[in-house]
Image 1: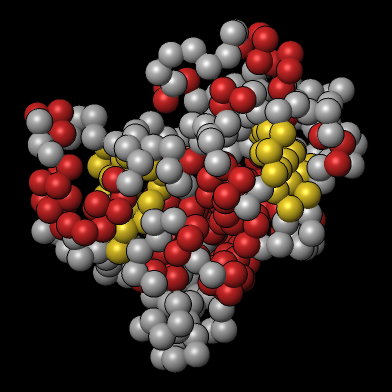
Image 2: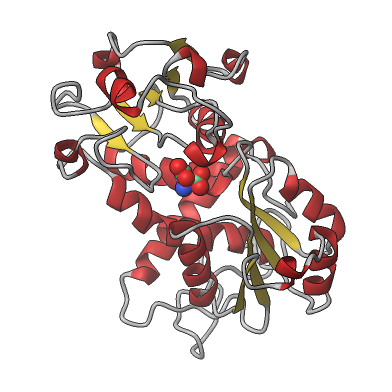
Length: 325
Ligand code: ASP
């Protein structure tokens, strides 16, 4: 696999391999020196055309923990402000011979275009309302760690499904791993034909009790052209997950950033059922595993554990004896 643009690029066995590798990186994350030499001498460029806290920070930390040289480029403050096109920007950055470009854009499909313009591996870090595959992987990882197994879990994805790349990637990813997925929200925030991704659709929380996992989405107002709900207060009264609606047996997830008091009430954000902080934590090891998969591992890759090596669990500078990953 050269690029990661969509969850559709991944078979179940690919997902299993990435999650397994993330587990082995979690061991490294528990050490005092949290670094392995896997990507020493290689460059990772994070190119972000849209706001980000978690995704950009965790990709940068992940690449550094793999000993890559990391360059963070934000559209704001770059030559994009001077009118440089995306293609020219990508070709300019490609002249530095990066091994990977981690790319975020407000436009659906933009990561696929970038992949055509560079010889680097491209990782889609969110393209408009299309996809956010590494978010889906870290969600699977977090949930599997907590629930033990994903098979047969009933996952409800609640909120602004229409504008959510996370919903799209997660419907595919949870489905691929054997979960039953239901999406729920007001009809105005439900994409037409979403069932074809492999989920059920509900327009009220009446049956929310059947869910094992409630995955709440942010109201993505930056992507809304016009008004999709009468008011946020009205939306919250019908769809907010609060202490009354969330059963004690249910787990709660959210990709962040959370709008407190809109999609989630404060009491559930801070409850022991919430996995939100663990999702953030998982971002680093899962993104390490994705960088490893594309740049150093994967079946037949140059450092395929079945081939010429694997990740070294040793800190940078120490022995790089092959280790099972
Ligand atoms: N952080 C996620 C994303 O970039 C979710 C969100 O913004 O609501 O898509």
